[in-house]
Image (tube, rainbow over all chains, first blue to last red; front, side, top):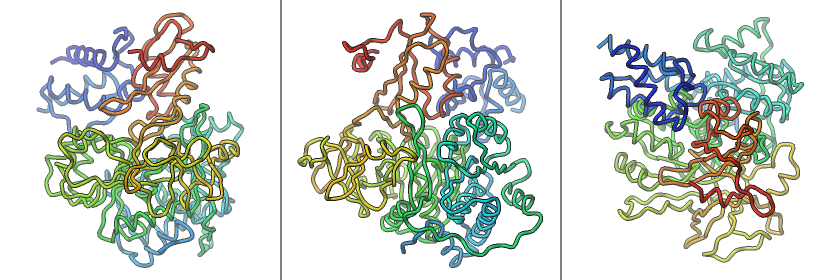
Length: 86
Length: 520
């Protein structure tokens, strides 16, 4: 999967699950997901479970940190680095 | 073994078990012995004395949960002051309000947050002494800080203060209905009477390993901190990040062979549903304690299947009294049971009764308000004499704290929780005044009207906000969530937002909450 595909997938999931009714253009690649309260800890776990399933990666408990998941751009980088290492 | 002051628990254990491990940071594995923790908190005490902190003062704690924050807490008690813990991740303006409200003399603060906090304090014309601990200096920020500030050398004083049992020990701020948090004042006796009751029920010894999941600003932490340290046991400090990570927490429980776990039901549910707690074998857990909200029976049943050998206690009590009733969950839960378990009978260190609005006893089997008196009941709310007197019913039988919780007394003095008398709700163990959420959202420039309601669902309590906007159209959900993240503690964030052209009104032109409760 390339970065654009991952971004699109993550954006669609977040909009559908956690931002019902939000205009898609308001969720940018750099919107702060955790520090701006869009994903709480339970939502973060749901997102991680979705990424693991649809990208075929395994995310270790230690990797559940804001540095990896705080924006769509960070998510895409993180998922790509996981895919490269498997 | 009753003490006059809470820090005596640590001092006595340090004499008895100097080499025993007192506390472990569960994520880093760093640990400290009783002797070292006692000595480190002595140094904090001496430093606080040197900068002018005196018995009766208040000192703030705005730190991540750690060995450092534990030593700071004891240092503050040893100087005879009261500690005021806050959520270091909460909006700085809210923390500055709390510290200014109770007039702290000094604040231990994580270095990276010191400047923002200083600015917010300056806006309130407050200038307490900020004592910054810097985790980028290494794993022992407190020792590093003390070595730097005490570099000139200091004649070590050898005596801790000996406050009386009715002196203030800590102030815990909870959500306030008027939009500002209010400070619950608790004394050494309030804390120690509860700790001693826990000893009676749990019969801990030096081989026990306790969890400390709740943050120090949350009243569950009183058991986590003082009960293990009284008995020479070990406490495993679970910090903010680990506390949100169920898989890692489940590993800590199994690998560290914890014997007593205490948290909200939400965290326990998370451990079973998302942490793979059942994949691990051979737990050492003797007790699983939970408090702060109703535990849905469905989740409790699953947990009991995973950890069948432990005893399960439902603990109940507001911050103003800490735990005042308890109920032991039976070994087997009937398959058709869905009703939550009772909050149980009064603990041995309190008296409980059910009263009506005029303070008269309500007959057994009828709904009324639970009132509590005895050693653990708070002094009052900081600087709020009217709120304090409104919270108590005083008659010839004593001074009774009105919990605001509506209960029914059943057979054997067992109480069942029925609901609230006001607009306070509990979600994931945190108490939330819906009015505080409304007050925060009214500060949003585009919002003209707002009303928050809470709904009880099978999965727990959810909070829904209805609002009208000045422009007449819905606001971006991202913007609303962002605004809440920067103006409310995370635990108060609403679950749902619903835009309305106008909010429904009653005939007296007040917001019609009954109508909102019926809206989808």
